[in-house]
Amino acid sequence: MVEFQKMEPSELKAYYADLQTEYEKIKAQGLKLDMSRGKPCAEQLDLSLGMLDMVEYKSPSGLDCRNYGCVDGLPEVKKLFAPLLGVKADQMIIGGNSSLNMMHDTIARAMLFGVTDSVVPWGRLPVVKFLCPTPGYDRHFSICELFDIEMISIEMKEDGPDLDRIQELVAEDETIKGIWCVPRYSNPTGITYSDAVVDGLARMRTKADDFRIFWDNAYAVHHLTDHPQPLENMMEACVTAGHPERVFIFSSTSKISLSGAGVAMMAASERNIAMIRKQLAVQTIGSDKLNQLRHLLFFKDEAGITKHMKKHAKIIGPKFELVFEMLQTQLAEAGIAAWNRPQGGYFINFNTMEGCAKRVVQLAAEAGVVLTPAGATYPYHQDPLDRNIRLAPTFPPLSELKKAMEVFILCNKLAALEKMIR
Ligand code: PMP
Image (cartoon, rainbow, N blue to C red; front, side, top):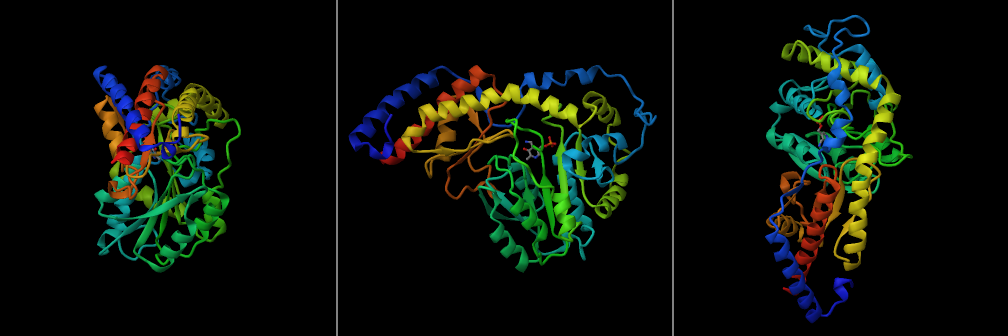
């Protein structure tokens, strides 16, 4: 293969015609492949099957988990997961099965009642704004859309979101109430925030006294290598900076145990947690403690989680490798796309030639391969350069992933050639 930019117009046309023939043949195969969402595959879910055989219902301290109560979760389960979030157990709330649910409710409560330092509930203000590092997690942006929170895109750099820009904005605009952060193996960029970014976010001067960092550490232990890049402790950074109330931390076991039946958790300062616990007690008498107990008995301790995550890495590592290898050998030389090589998490961040992402997704769909919609990784679904696509390699079996990637690579070439020939 030759770099497309170096090809003569006649060569580009001939190559395009060949690829079109190939594309029509693939279309005729009637494929039905899905690479759209970062879901674990069945083999990964099987790793936690043992949990379902557990019939124990007494917690280690003797609580009958079949019954009502314990609104913020079993203390032993808080202890199990506290190191995951880098907090003290009494700074935690154990929730239901979804951390997204907890993020949604945290925003809803802030809109209705404000947070600990609010003068008025956010929802009573004429405008509320959130900073959104992009590309980012589409479901964070959907929460903002639902609550009519104005989103401001912040460019993601190599070591996290553009700190200078963030500092500039929050210092002068008191309607900016928060920022979404996926600090480790960010969805979809795979970036882990540097110490400088963590410290900067913790320290910065914000015009809003009730500014909050939504620290969604969904991929805290989801490493693909044996030597993970460290992530500075955000809670400690906030305390050291004199802003202990600034951070809400979220995570879950959705991609540790079972995506549909895991355990979600959040953490914040004792003052924040006291306020949330009081509000939560009106909403529920308690989450599913049997599931919390199953997780405790299954994982036992932090080492148990680490060991389990290595089994996940063994299953999904080869899928990531396959994608890297195919992109490298079949697409790199064309010089029409760029991608990252994450050290963990669930995604590969892919940039097509500018102005081609929507077309690539459309071409792939017509050939039977579903990708995350182009634009989904940006607020309001607007990718200004129409180039970003989130690749999710974990769910399909290797053979299907290979086929899907062949189609994806072909569609990239077709979309780029269409643009260049025009
Ligand atoms: N946050 C991020 C960054 C995610 O990628 C995901 C899963 N796609 C979630 C949250 C969802 O978490 P949960 O299953 O705990 O609701």
